[in-house]
Image 1 (cartoon, protein in one colour):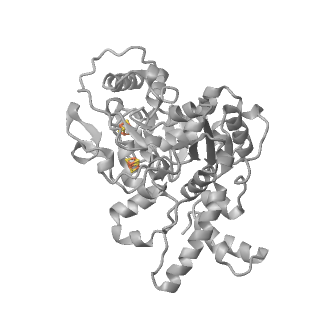
Image 2 (image 1 turned 45 degrees about the horizontal axis):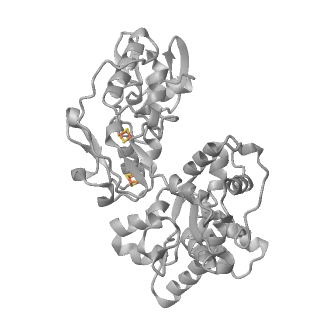
Image 3 (image 1 turned 90 degrees about the vertical axis):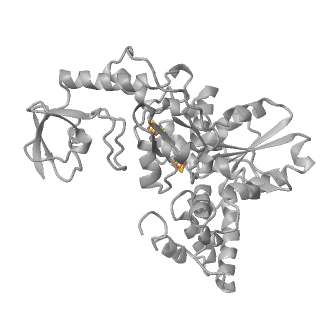
Length: 451
Ligand code: SF4
Ligand code: SF4
């Protein structure tokens, strides 16, 4: 605990881990590129540099707050310094902003505009690097990388995968998989977390928007979509709806207007998974195969287990994920000429996770040699399709998902949250299904992150 003076005002601090946090607590939004509060501190971009009363400058993210400190966050010297840093970063960056996928949300561009960079005096001397498009989920463009290290720390500190790291030195420095391999030759599981923290277009999601739009425009094609439970909350957030509001009815309405023929709820597939997985758990226990039985719903987790802990892979459920079970059901249903009207089926899944794009390509995701789900569209891709369509999100009428697969139980719905699959299986295996028994499972703490 203590007090420090920030830009002439006394500010108290308690357990803030660095001076930057105290500055932000004081209501000053100091720019940063490489600081992500849940990751380890790296201090490479130096944008958060501040000045003390003796004129000494230091990166505020890497300094522990001390009682009596006097600091300045916005002196002419600091403004010049920040502008120069951004100019240098931009100089070593592929600046085709007009066609860059993230140009509307690029943090680097936003900061450059904020500190007033209006031209770049330096030439880009970095050698042009090839794109890494090996992953079905993530596209890497090293020419847009500013070496902030956020993706490296996310992949290592939080995900525990370690697929990418810094390589080479000086102007040759790169963030890349070991030995400059392709992402698919590493332990990368396609989770997309590196993309979430990347402040530029150096890591983006592989887009499947174009083929889906083409299918929608083709009169000889039936386009069927299933929507995962988590999407209906995340998309509302994106369009400024109140936090936690279920916007499934609006999504269904908009997608119908865009030309999707049938729209179903993946909760139905989750219910199928609960039935199968509960049966498999009982078999594991009674046949002596052993427990635990790990869920197979998350393809990133399945890949991680297969690649890093192959001896545990026998404990992964052999059931398909809800998306894949449902994908097979949809494929089968529309094989019937009564349902397909002689048209070709394009089977789309709207999912919250980039790893799902890889899951549909796995050999076990096929039936009779045919891939069950054709395309995975992420929540973010759906949001950009909706924006492109011009349909105003909060002006549409609410519609229900289509029958016969538009229904699902509460157990299927909670698949979207941590511990939800376990709770759903416990509910299924519970002898009595009275309210008290169900409540006891909910209150057992199996759902959520605790423990
Ligand atoms: S997609 Fe996930 S596993 Fe792959 S590099 Fe990014 S964070 Fe690491
Ligand atoms: S890829 Fe993105 S997050 Fe990773 S170091 Fe480069 S700019 Fe930073």
